[in-house]
Length: 137
Image (cartoon, rainbow, N blue to C red; front, side, top):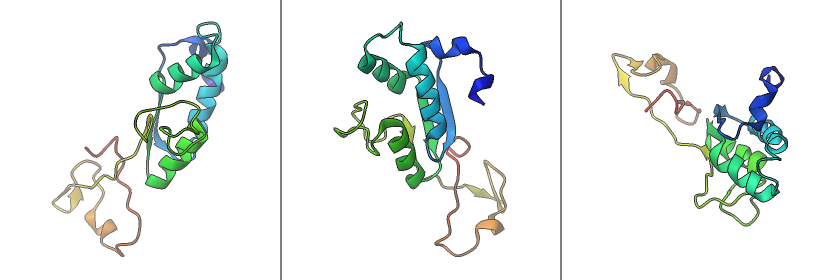
């Protein structure tokens, strides 16, 4: 999929990328790899380049807490990018890969935001029931 994008995109230091449903983080990692190569002339120092890319260009929204940790591990080489093991240091533990447990808002038996019937989620409480952050406020 990334091969279909214009090659000059990888040398644009203002381009931003969002994976709205991160799982393993591979998609964001592959974007970062291309930016690392493409921005070499703009940022000859590798650490400065990584800081710029990871803090200003690559973003993700994870669908579960586990996938947020996997994505961070794939992208930052650490599930907590504020740790000493991260290739880029952030002040906050999520870096630019966000995860928030979202709840649905039920109205007349359906979710107000995505329209899923409440009957679909009237089941065993231990089963997962993702509510995507980019749909549910």
